[in-house]
Length: 130
Image 1 (cartoon, one colour):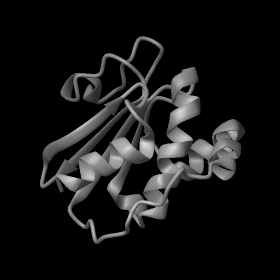
Image 2 (cartoon, rainbow, N blue to C red; image 1 turned 90 degrees about the vertical axis):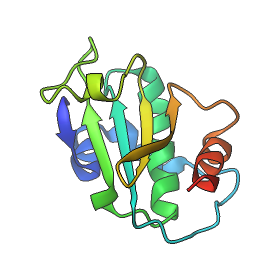
Image 3 (cartoon, rainbow, N blue to C red; image 1 turned 135 degrees about the vertical axis):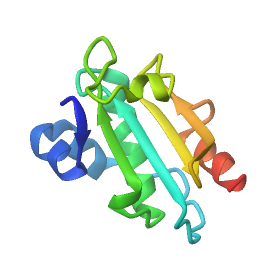
Image 4 (tube, one colour; image 1 turned 120 degrees about the vertical axis):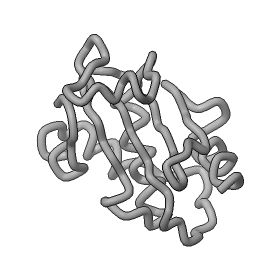
């Protein structure tokens, strides 16, 4: 999977991502708030064990926050971390997965490869700046 991917296509072609998504129970539920200007870019490799572990969890958190599919941009990268539109350069990707959160086209935070504390905590820290 290289380039733009939908959640549906990801789950359809990689059942392990769907299974991990279904099995994930967040440590805590983030407070829901209206986040209409939030754009989330998920640059990942379907071949990458860190992506296989973190992407399904992150998608589960985003869905629990009622982030719409239109606000989530899944971008599959090749093993050498490239994709047809060159967004790996735009987002300065060095590790996968890289989760980049934007508000009004400005980056407000990112999680690279794995969370510092937990996905919930790291995401909450980023959203608190929102």
